[in-house]
Length: 181
Image (cartoon, rainbow, N blue to C red; front, side, top):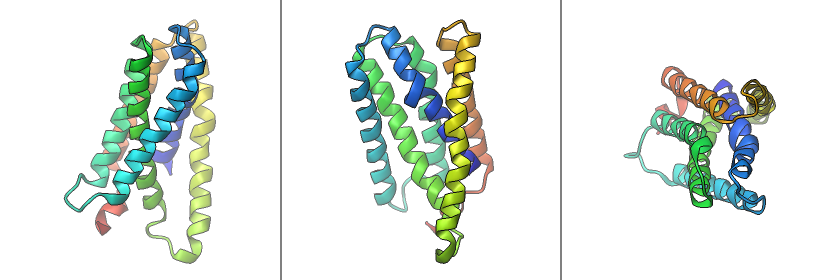
């Protein structure tokens, strides 16, 4: 659940909040923000479909978690340096793939060892814990942006560092879904 809180922290600090501010600050019209959101969602759905249909010979759950967090790192580090609708669309797509890879793996991992009768409670607890990241991500990002005098690059780079920390945690934490593949 802690790793999922990290995911939500990153996504809600960047893609679901301040990435739009970066786009608008470069001159992109507000009308495109909905398109970027749709790209993010569609990419996530594609990644989740891949997770659902992948074969035994595919990458391990741990590798997919790492790739997902690296995608979010790329979004955070590259986005504040971009200009143009196409580049923003590409970065939203990359972030969507990252979130789409991570979310189903961590959810499955959270309930894998729980009896069917208790899975609802386990999922509720899991969601309660990861919602902390949804709340804290935008709060911290706002503080970082204020400290950077309203500039976005440094705060986004800090989020990239948080994503790398999540990569490290992905290497250390046991991933029980790998045992059952």
